[in-house]
Image (tube, rainbow, N blue to C red; front, side, top):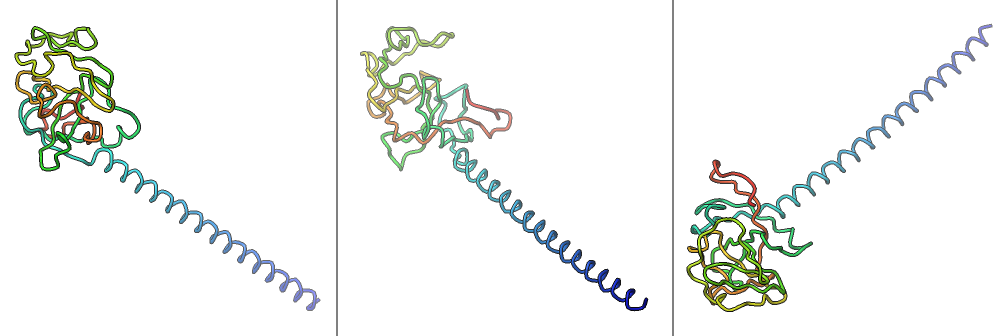
Length: 203
């Protein structure tokens, strides 16, 4: 009897020991999975942070009133630097660029009017693109047509830009600016962060 009891106790001890080891292995596997999931989450957060910084981390200050009333002088603007890596600027986009790629210049903010292949002309103070009146809303008559007095054909990888405040803007109408090459475009102006009362997306 004593021998049988001893054997049962030994078997119980061994079984308990095996269960303990199994539990410990399960705990190790669970801990490893948690650590792996945590590492993946950190990588995702870092990736998202990088994308946000790259896409919208560039901040520029609006100089002058050429984009009134869309963007005011002194406004702080976030620039999407990624978007034009996957697609080209389109008519109506507000872009940020350096005139003629001049790194010493302040950033210019203007609206794209003509894209490659478009024909742009200003006649009798009115803006035409491909023979059709561009401005459908009430706007001031353009006093200075500049080089756009004669029809301009926008070249490959070039963009014709104007300020929204047409009569107070240095833009593609002027020979020293001209059409903007895509390589000089830094990104799309998409959000005003300051002043707070003007905060919002740029349209």
